[in-house]
Amino acid sequence: MHKQNLKLIGPFKQILPMTNLGLKGALKDEQLTIISDGGILVDGDQILKVDTYQNLVDSYPDCKKEIIENDSVALPGFIDAHTHICFAGTRSFDYAARNNGKTYLEIAKEGGGIWSTVTQTRQANQDKLVELMLPRMQKQIRNGITTTEVKSGYGLDVDNELKMLRAIQKANEIHPLDLVSTCLAAHICPKDIALNEEAYLAYILEQIEPKIKEEKLTKRFDIFIEDSAFTPILSKAYLLELKSRGYQLTVHGDQFTPGGSQVAIEVGALSVDHMEASTDKEVQAIAKSDVIAVALPGATIGLGCPFTPARNLLDAGASLAIASDWNPGSAPQGNLLSQAAILGTFQKLSAAEIFSGITFRAAAALGLQDRGSLAEGQLADIVSFPTSDFREILYHQGELKASMVWKKGKEVL
Image 1 (tube, rainbow, N blue to C red):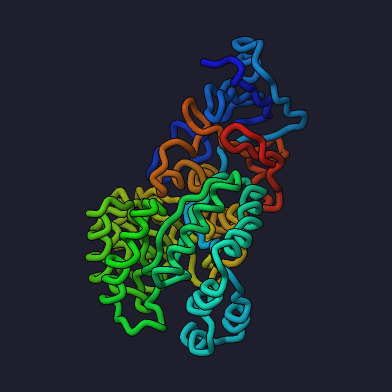
Image 2: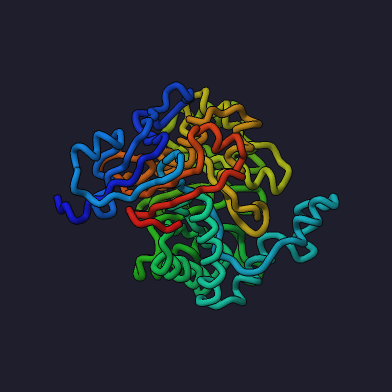
């Protein structure tokens, strides 16, 4: 242990370390561990100990101290396990058209939809995409988020998918927010290449994936399983091939029609994200599996569709994470805490279930073992809010802003 690296942060009125909670199933607030007048002892970029502030002062009297002057509540840094924040352009046309009564297909025929973002993102070079991502990443930090997953999927050909993944990698190098990249080249079939679904998936495997592996651009692949994108049968074969090549898998599933969640189970995906169209059959199947359900309330708010059946999933014994789905089309708000609080209101989720969904359960959805809780050996990713009672954080539905954020032990807000 290097004493010069030790730093004691505190005192916090309350610390919620998010430890000793199950990965699956319902949770009550009474199960939360709450450390009153607590401190967090940091060794470099990791947490060494969480205890009462006085106990830590007595045990480590000579360590550096970062004094918290005002009443604050500390939690693990939040994790946004599903976003699309690497994009160019806007889809305000889509939003206005939807609210004006037009259907998804009508909007797409008039130049909107995912292809609109593909067209705009292709026009931006790598440096421009990085430039556009940085303020979005800073907004995540301001919202208490210290790790964010980011998908490609607005390129849909070799050069542009690689451009997006390189931009994500570059942005990750120059900003304190940790980015976890995912290849979503299988978002939709591109309109400018005369390939059907099966041929396009083969194109990804033959032309895009080898270059991703060569440049080590991502360890994760995703696919949109839906009537407007890729069928379950083709998706399963595609994902199993990627699994055989060593990739982690996740699935956009059950957003408008069921089917994707079953594929996620069959291929052993880490998560299935969306599930707004899931019936009790899909809920029970996910609960019996190790696949984590990721609710995306931002898409519900943006599209006006039903929420993910979060309450039913938890009561059935599933693991539930909550992510923002921040994207230019269906979820442009990009405020995870507000969305999670609103989901909690409509689905009657406890604070323990919501905070778990944006901390250690979200970490598990990304296959990350080194974050999501405040415990020895975990990354010192910490967020604090200016209140003496943790219940105030969700009560204000995102309007109570983070007062301080630490990433790997360094204050970044």
